Image (tube, rainbow, N blue to C red; front, side, top):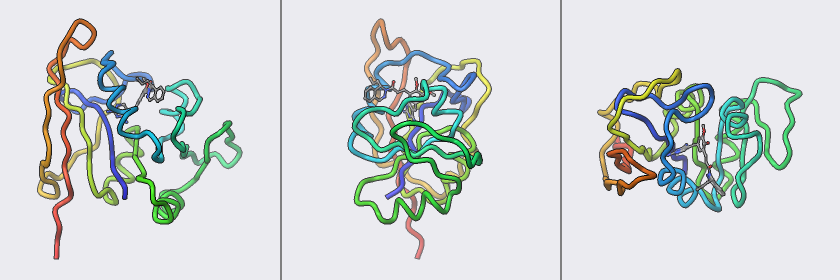
Length: 165
Ligand code: RAR
């Protein structure tokens, strides 16, 4: 099972200088809870933007074209096919965790998408690729709690891919 997971603003912005454009700790807690004991796939820039260390209790796969790339406690892979092959052999869910180029490459293979939608406009430099909404239907939408540390209107949304026969 392949699931894309991301947080975006209301212009589909997802990143700024390889980091997140906002501070929304509740989303990171959601990301942590959702991906615990599963596999995370991220691009090399996202991995380095997160400090270049894998998060505990989940297998991290870093995708790069650099054949010499190494990092501790992660699997380094070099193609979409390699990740798909690994994912198919796994009972765990594989979460596609960013950034833009990685979402674009894997979206055609995702069964579900988990989007945190922040109803604000931030400044940044990386966007989620265009989604063909005819391919997806909403199965769950929950407004996140707003407080001093999470001062935005935001929603956790889950979509499944439409079945085609
Ligand atoms: N795909 C996503 C992500 C990905 C994402 C991107 C980042 O920067 C580009 C991040 O750095 C800020 C993070 C950070 C995650 C993080 N944790 N995540 C899991 C911590 C803290 C959790 C409260 C952690 C985790 C697991 C164990 C221990 C600590 O800092 C993530 C973000 N959000 C969404 N929706 N999709």
